[in-house]
Length: 295
Length: 290
Image (tube, rainbow over all chains, first blue to last red; front, side, top):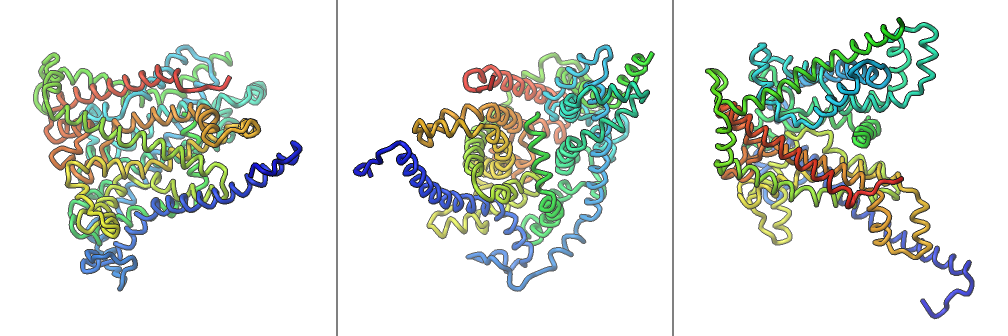
């Protein structure tokens, strides 16, 4: 390589570039191989769950394992659905999460708007209080909340999950405040001069402008509420009131050895969310990224 | 006049969240601290016992076991998890098909930890689990992952890294996109090698992101519970018994609310201390532009 050293600087540059291009191509191929292997490791557990869910006991404990069930045993799915009220759990998870997402987006954007744009005495101290509570791990409030819920009769009721979720989300308040702060003053001032009331400004100017932020925060709240486990575990008793993760845990307790059935139940708990994810992946990933970076 | 009206709206707008903050965060935290000085089974009378609950915790080897297990989990997950996600992010940053890869790596992030735990129970089954079957192909006899005290935490760490690597990677990718290309071009003209580019450009430029992910991972790993509860019930022989599991056990299995509260206050203090230490240490390695 060093024997015919290029004479001019320009020549040297060209040689460097072509040499680099070749190297880049090879390294990219190696990278793709590694990344595909990684992607396979990420997807494989889901595929194996699906495959296992379509096997009966005689197939599932076969060594070496078979990748594709033969024959396909569909009965695990109706069996799981009759063994446990998955439909009901889906309804519970769905409406709890829907109420939490909608109401908490509303209450937290209201507070965020007030903290970002309205001057009132104590606003900075109160906002500091919101920031400070973000430091509190939720496990610390678990026992007091359990006692409080018991006192007001909300144990074994969905209210114990809905009301705290809908009324308190310091992280959402903080994030939305950041976004609303970025909205130029002139927009609001023009509306104020035109005589628009504060709620009107919130509804017709602020809310439309922070739609992307709302959807990002909404996705974040959705994932947190949908996948929440420890609170439903502590607050709820009746299986008919269980959410999907809680019901799956119960289902697991009943069928510890029948892995085909267990994997069918797990598939039921995972598939709908993953289907939504596949269709909305761009929005979901971007939403989670935004909430992560701004946090 | 207008201003006063606006001020009133301001107070009104923060009211719902302020009520929520008081009822579901501030009052409960104070209540937890008060309870930690009480002896109470949740039903009968409360008795003030001073620091007795804390002394009981510090003398209880199960409490220390839960702390050690949690720290062990942290050591197992955080360095590997962060390194892996940073490497993946760097690899993906300038490659075609980035978005397609991202979809796969991010999949576990939207899945509930309970589902993930049940899936991995089956993968890690000692006799029939696919992992040990694959290992046996290359002549390795895999351990009984979840029923071996030596391996249970490693197993839980493995699935936790798998579950979180996509999230961290995506955050790192966002951080990497903020690095101007001209920095790398300038370094190339100076003849920098790939590792030097990483050491002197990528790493410092992405260090605020690394800092954020480190803090979040530390807080998250102190709160690990779902996996241990679903997969192993804290066992075998309390080998996967974590701090939050300890709180849960004392509060909701033994109904010793005072003792459980003292454990939760200790958890709070530990998390606070670790976070403050991180903020102090950041001056040494976190690089902020301007």
